[in-house]
View 1 (cartoon, helix red, strand yellow):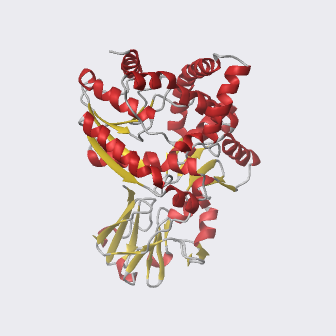
View 2 (view 1 turned 180 degrees about the vertical axis):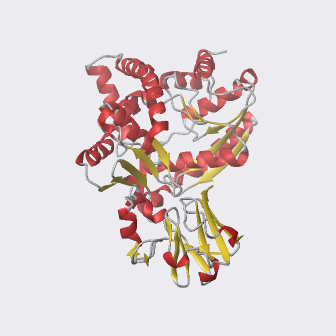
View 3 (view 1 turned 45 degrees about the vertical axis):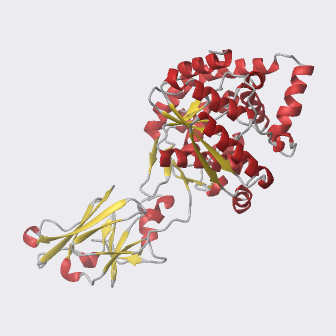
Amino acid sequence: MTEIQHKVHQANARHELITSGEKVLVALSGGPDSVALVTILVSLKRKLGIQVGAVYIDHHLRPKAVKKEIAFCRELCATLKILFFCEEIDIPRKAQLEKSGIEETARKYRYQILEMVADREGFDKIAVGHHRDDRVETIIFNLARGAGRQGIIGMPPKRGRIVRPLYDVSREEIETYLRDRKLSWMTDRSNADVAFARNRIRNSVVPLLKKELSPSAPENIIRFSEIIAGEDKYLQAIVDDVYAEVVSCTPGGKFKLDLNGRFGYDIWLLRRLFFELLGDAGLFDIEYNEIERLIGLISAGVDSSVQLRDGLLATLSGNDLYVQSPGKKITPTVLPLPGEVRLSYPRYQIESHVVKATDAGQIKKSSCRFAIVDADHLAEPLVIGGIRPGARFHPFGRPGSKKIGDFLTDKKYPRPLRDELPVIYDQNGVVWVTGFEIDHRMRVTDKTKRIIRFEIRRY
């Protein structure tokens, strides 16, 4: 076993990257890092007890080079006797539509495609060619753009099923391995393009640090990040416990953070909770200023919102912070009598049952989960929908009608949740504002002959 193979084997054991019996999909670009990665994993597949395959992703960034790279990768995989897959995505178009940078867009969709291929082809892990030097460059990049503790830690050895077997291997060791084995690779000219921030760090910043400060600067940066990572592991356990208690997901997919205890939170804990919250809501590459915007939002103490990247909206309502992708609405859906409807947004199942009126004198009111109404007062068909603009109803047992919005305000029902509150309507108006109250005209009386029982529950 060569020194580099030994390092990969050790990293796999130390970080528990790949388990015996697993299928590993390698992200293969044809560059030196991915060529070294796939050949090393193939050479270790018996020792590790794994199967290996590879995928090339055409990003539509270098059309002249792509055909040669695909041919090279296909031939390499044929030589190694492993499965080869090829996928493509138009990153420039995606970046233009999403108004985001090429690097950020490529990274986002690259991982999505890797996950898709792994799912489709039955791979357990996805191996990427990031190495020790990449970790240094990532830490510098993150610090420069204002990232917090997670940015200082840089790339983890694994995240989900993404693994980095070259985690402890340097670029120099990779190149030596390839030369010694007489392995060829493709040169990506975009790696020298100073238009990309990471290339400037690799080709200018790191050499300058080594020359002007210390030849050991990269190793010192890695050592510092590993110290922080050890401390972070301890802090993360605390964050996870708190997060599980104060964060929940609504039926409409909004993330809700209970801020009742915010004055008891240390600022570091609040920042970490926000970091986890934004990550769960789907935000990539979270930056320090985004966390600070949330700090500012709750510090203001008034109900308001801030727009975040990727279409996310953060809204403060009372003692709760909601993070959501706005714009979703309840699709009007007919509710049969009897019958049931399962809404895709929000995730509720609503049922209607015909009930005998034997206990009509005792059951006259709704609860949060069900409602009892006089069937003879219903004007079918019934429709489940959202709150209609200006919709009014006569709350059970109260004088006069009221706008649903005003009724919910009186009930102190959060505004961010109103777009995911189903309402049952008949042809004459509101029947039941689910979770709250029926319309007074639908009340059950001693003269009621048939009862309809509505029930709502999450699924």
